[in-house]
Image (cartoon, rainbow, N blue to C red; front, side, top):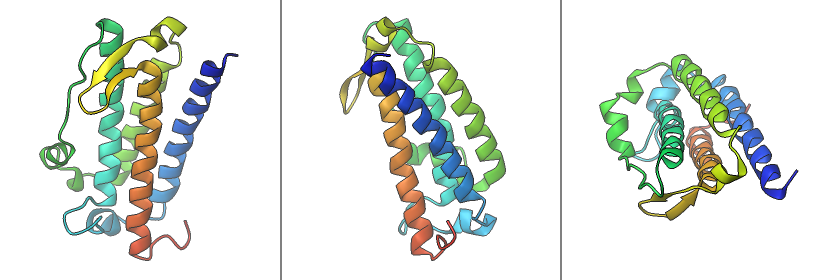
Amino acid sequence: MTALAGLHTRTFNTLKLNLAMLENIFQRVTAKQATTLRDGPNGWTPLEILCHLRDFDVIFRERGELVLAQDNPPFPTFDADKLAAERAYNQGSVAQALAELTANRAQLLAFFEPLSDEQWARTGVHSRLGPFTMTDVLTHIAWHDANHLEQLTRVLAQAGNMGSV
């Protein structure tokens, strides 16, 4: 196994673990907590964070598909707060959002896992971060998960809800 293949395997495993962490965290969060606790006065609720992760798994996969279909394509950009409002994230259900994230994560992994070395090297362009190889896209997804897992646990900890997590 090459070093790059090892990185991909570790990142796939991280994405699976991140999903398991979310499932474990949300087993301990009530529906009221999921929709009322916030990351600051205008920040997201736990449910909004979960829905954001669910939707961005689709966006990340679509970016990957774009990279395979075109040479050096620009990635579409999204206003995450606007998506949260338009899609009424906080009106949904935790169980449904988790089920959809689980399905989206399976599709995301199924897309990335069979890529060839040549495909991993293909690039697209992120509007703020510049050129991104497919490996960069994959590692960015893991970072994105970790960023929002920290946000989620911080929101819950500030409210005293992480004692048993």
